[in-house]
Image (cartoon, rainbow, N blue to C red; front, side, top):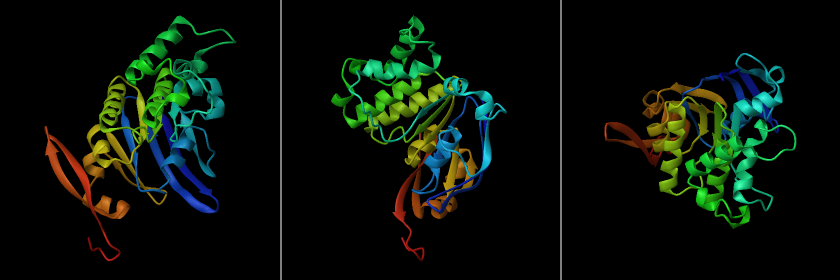
Length: 262
């Protein structure tokens, strides 16, 4: 599935949040959506996922609107993991992950063999198989995020959106999830992930989209987006640069004062 956003504009609470955003997402690419707090990242993801209607502009899925495509086809074609990680029911973990199979099920029948296999694969991929018999209320914040990630994976959609998928995770599981996202992209899934961790974004993403004040400041390979000028303008920070195993990285190092002082 290819997704195209054309001229997206929206204001929330009387404040402009997106101001003319054009963006194309294609299969087989891990795209990191980055930018400071309030830049419009989550709003853009929600519009692209058909969870929020823009004031102006349009989103096309393989050239069709969401209405033309149909809700069932969109639910099978696009899986979404939103930030927050709230679960408001005392569901067992494997049952919670199985909710990701709803777009593929017909009628009120139980899980098919294909559904059960998809749930097992998703739990294994998210390192959550050992949690399958717990209830959601027995999980830590990091465990809950991994379980919800497994639910998104269980859809096995050609396009996956993830809003801050590593925010509540320890370093080991942050790396695991980023490696998993990268691997899924290599296998052909299109992925859009909202990220705040610039070292992870620069290391794992094929492409970065940098939002500032509701507009795209930069869009391209990590090395073309994570420049000193872009990071000063968007984040008001200076960075330290380094290299490990032939891969460059940036570390936010110091804030820039109102007159450019460190």
